[in-house]
Structures are given as structure tokens and as C-alpha cells.
Length: 316
Image (tube, one colour):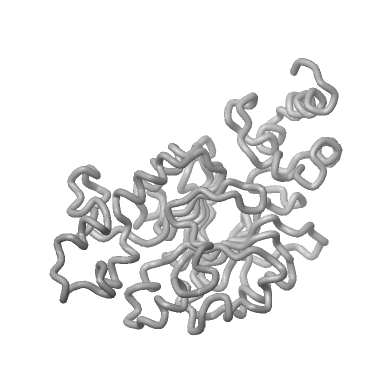
């Protein structure tokens, strides 16, 4: 199992690290052994599978051994409906974990508000390079109404298009914010095959972080120069058999910035176990930056004053 670190898909250093709040896993394609191994090792509060799950058994059966160790969440991918197998579809949407699909929702997961957009863009439904009003079908119901009964699958739209992104789902998600993290199967526009509408969704929701699967690449977009440091959010692509842990390991010196130990200690005095969550969330008093990033950029004094004000009362 390959971790995605700020310097790329290399092994973590050998020092002891605290358990991550969240772990994001690239497309499993039916192989859950790496997911189970990583959860048993790191014990995250929750995990998110980034689509193309293709479970060979019901998902709750595939992951039975870790259901008492972590919360399992997911978004679906294109191969979860167009793999040629009804069983792959049923093993996901018929699973006891089906209600953990984040698609079209903003849900509190491990202390973060996580938004999800599963599936892919298909021009037969909506070409996102064109205005959304020009989409062939605004919703799955609208598409269903144009179909003859014999054309339907289980009295609905085709199985394939149940992983197509419909404008109605996208627009509902636009109105569902704010959120801290956006997980998608499709990539943002910084990827050669990504989409500006993913960026627009992330910006509207006000997220700090975008994580996607689909392209089978480990990408830290900012570190690879594909996004500017001043971008409103950071983005990562996660390869199959890889993961992204969040928050970042506080010992790492790259990525979102590591606050000094005394600042981290102060945050722990104020927030306890939620200190890293607070440090990694954008803050309105810091021009929308996270306290960790603001401190790493030379603003540790202001972050410390905010923490003191929260702890003791007073003016920042």
C-alpha cells in the first residue's frame, strides 16, 4: 500500500505518527486487502473510497474485518455501473453500507464537513464545457421519462448512466455548503483530463481540500507546480492501492505547513484531540487561510493570540 505524501508516493519516515482522522483510498477495483491492511495499521476515524469500488461481495462483507475499527464512506465511479456486471452494482448499492455514499451530500465525517460528487461526466447527459442549461437531461428522472419501458433497466435509466453526473445533483451540491473537503471521482481542471466545474464547486463550497480518484495517479498538484500556492484549495489525486492520510503528519516539513511544537501544544490545551482539526481548517480571521498554513508563513504570533483569546477570553 503506497501512501501519498507531499513529496509524492514514497514511503513515510520511520518516526511514530499520530493516527490520521481521515484516510482517502484510490479506486479499489475489487481489491480491498490494501485498504484493510492500512486501516488495521493506522486506525483512522473514517475512510473514504474514491470510486470504482467493484466489490465482488456486498461491500459490508468485503470490509467486515474493519467495520469496528473505522467508519466507511465512499463515492461511486464509472466502473461501478458500466463494468458489465449487475453484481458489482448490487454489491455496492445493495450493501448495508449503501447509505454511506457521499454523492450529492455534505456529511460530517471525523470532524470535517465532507462533500461528495461521485460518477463521471458523459456528454450524452451533460458536457460540462457547455452551459449547464444546455445539458441534454437535467436529472435522471427527466431522462427516464424519455425512455420506453423496454429500454429501462429495473424500470429506471440504464445501469451505465447511473454513474453519470446529472446537473440536478451538481446544483444541489452547490447549495449544500459550506464544506471543508470535497471528494470526487473526476479531477479538477489542473489535471489534463480535469474539469473547471469541479474547481467551481470546490470554490463555492469553500473547501480547503479536493481529493479525487479515477486517473490512477498520485498527484500533489501544488507541489508539482500544477496549481499556484495561492489557489483557494489544495488538490490531490490518489492512485489505486494508495492512500492520502489527513491531517498531514505534523512531522512532515512540506505540504500545508507544520506549526511549531509550542503552538501545537497550545492548540491541544484549547481544543484537546480536535487541535489538528482546528489548525487545518480555514479561519475567517486569517483571510481564509488555515491556522497551520498562516503560522508556517510567519503568522504564528497572530495564531497564538487567537488561541489565547479562545482560551481566556479577550480581543484578538
